[in-house]
Image 1 (tube, rainbow over the protein chains, first blue to last red):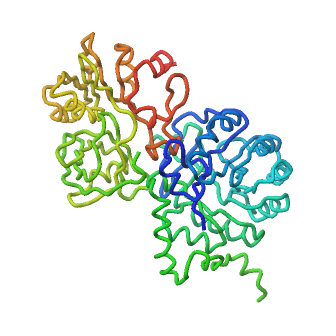
Image 2 (cartoon, each protein chain N blue to C red; image 1 turned 30 degrees about the vertical axis):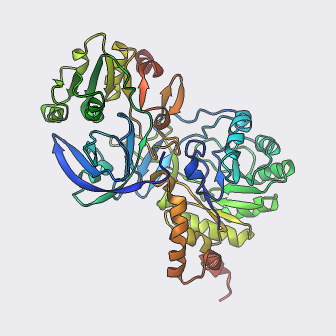
Image 3 (tube, one colour; image 1 turned 180 degrees about the horizontal axis):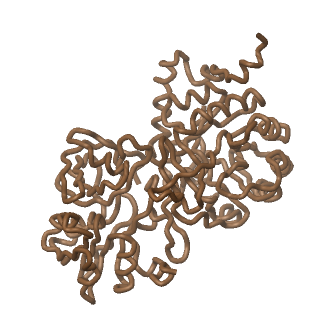
Length: 284
Length: 232
């Protein structure tokens, strides 16, 4: 079980010692053109969660490839590049220009920008034609049937899934106006965990693909729960904001979490949990 | 930056007007440069809160907290021997190589000034503005400071020709920037992490949205948008 960061939740160049605790660093999503991102306020704390509307702020593909990527390589941490765009060609072009990295994560589910016109499967298919690198499709649990989306991207050539992205949500201030300048934002943190666990379970059952599970992981026990639902690896997001030492801490906590759960190690916890959907498929 | 937060015991929690001076054991932390900040765990809340260092007594770090929300209220309720996670010092503080320092503070924005005064070598002139007499009780943290209480504005007390080092609410900072184009201003923004990870604290700096936690919180007045643009 590898411990990664959730895309957009760490700047490895600003905090290299945090990135070096990870088994892989996932970049902030790279889009073809530079994006300044959303106006502030961009974040709000909610009950057991937080909202963000960063708006895919990033230096753009050319600057990322020429300037950021070489410096990221110097960290000595396996790199995952998160790729975004507004049509299948945007994604495929960026994928075709990437080499020497561990994997590509296709951000198919940012709640803070307009969605691409092409379907998730069309984007994955275009990227599949453009690169031989492992392709992970990052999906949202907001879709009424995330397992169906998972099956579609698997058929289109995805090598793995990243589950889940944040969920679109709103927080109001004292005067009943949205806290975030954009109005809505993506909900992350512990409030998301039960939803994420369910999505991991049904997508694992639907595809059998390797899954990077994320959504509200705070502890080693949380990470183990994602593995129990079918995740192969996990990613830390919001917890990094409060605790930059979280990757090392979560790794340390795993042994005790395994012992408490009665499993020898994380690998023995894999798929111990069965989702209600799976159970319902069993004939009475 | 430190790669993890450390836990620090509460030494004392003292009322200063409507504010609370939260004194923590320093442990292995360094106080840093005045105007730098620390992320303090807010008990029961998901995210820590940013505070500039107010005082650095021997073996301690002290922070001035205004209980304006759930996180700051939880911090004000801490009692001796409670412990919280602390990360810092973070960001960029004040440049101390100034010839005629004048400290300008507004409300809870006086927080970094006592430590700044100490590091400038004693008691540089200071002017403080508060919205009420109760809030103005916090001026005790900066002995000798001149105090303005609403409706008098702190900017009315600024003498020309000084090297202004200021911290306060945005309208005050904009007014100070208009009066003193060379001022150093400590800004504030909602922050989830304090170390560049969340991209939440952006402000317009030199014409572009940049992360205040990395670029600031102390910025030269010339790098922030002009007051006229801010009003428009």
